[in-house]
Image (tube, rainbow, N blue to C red):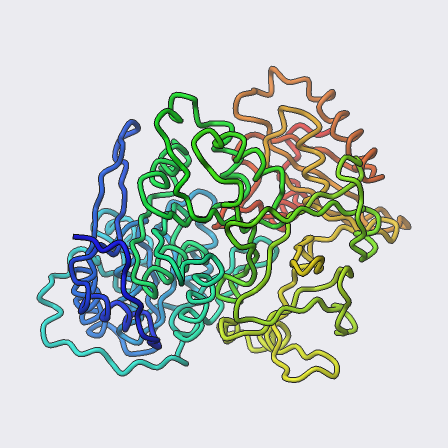
Length: 583
């Protein structure tokens, strides 16, 4: 039997301590359910672990890990999405080892990253499952790392095993950044960091006062997927229901059905997922779907677009979805994940800002209908953290309405980067002039504060500078994808390349995928490129040096699904798109 209102847990120092607590006081209550979709038309096969069963499996695998490596050793998780991934992660933490959340070989476009991360982390053991054991063993053969299948460890391995004394200051796991703007780096997240961030997120979304069901399809190697689907449910003792990202992509209605099936569902997804649901879920699939019980829908994109929330709500308002369920949020791996969020039950914070003023570092209001206005959603306020907007050069605090770098300080901020003390000092050890204490995290993100809300405007490293003026690439991308229906949404990259000798600033290039419903043979490519050039020129005053149209799946993405502008730019400069259609 399930209790709808779990008792509150005392404050523990580590996630495995919480698992043990729930196993003792609510052994038969469901902890994690993985909904598998083994066939295209499958409605889902549920596989569930109770808290008692989870605790047993965690202790059994932790005991086996201690036979393979010493405390502090890295344990790489190359598991498919599922309950064995969760068991492996928590077992590494219980054994006082350092988990490295990753994915099995074969994830499209991520093979080189997986090799690089394994080379950097140097794991002492790899945990996977029997289903992909042969594939993972072959992949790890050159590194000569032992591979352990979590689901083949017997329960009896837990007998007589005693967990080491927990240390909240020790590293719990390495969260490798997605690599959207640079090579992936491993952020050292301590036990105290992840527990603090789970509590902060629960408070932000109202889950500390009311029971929720965490529902998700984000991959568990992603920071938001790991905290929302594993850490937060463990700290709060609530049910977490998850599915594979591929199952969502094949049929997005599956996610919505899970949201409807569980009381006070709390879930997260990026912009593209909400837009995808709005366009792809059919009227037949909406039949009988009730979303009035959804507690909060988190959107942590960079930046969050109000139009995305509007389209999603318009598509599912008839199913009872409350407009106030949409919660724009901001976070990053260096802060475990959560930094700031709009609260559920409140209207979306909408801000129409003057594009020219924004490029000059000022957030000035504009008319929403003005074609030169930038429409952004407010990401609310932090919980248990300090957030400041800072001049990235002078390190001086900026006033409300001024655009600068977002700096963060709190118990959730990671310890630094694995094996990179120089970058750790630069990113995690910043000081504000005349402000004590020091130790601020430089996020590399640009933003401002208006009406008490954090507004994220872009990435510092992604800024395109032409003739002394700043341009945000995501702004140019939004204009380009709206210019022609054949441009695939959220699958394009705008970036600057070196100007010609004697030229001022950078030249601007757009590399865009065409939609899957259209073939190149049927497209009037010159007309498409003219439309994109005209739209960007009219709205941004930019002359595009090149518009390259590529096949679906060609624009590289990070492990978390974001377009990698840095890698797209590198491939463009290397001539990889020379055979594609340019104009």
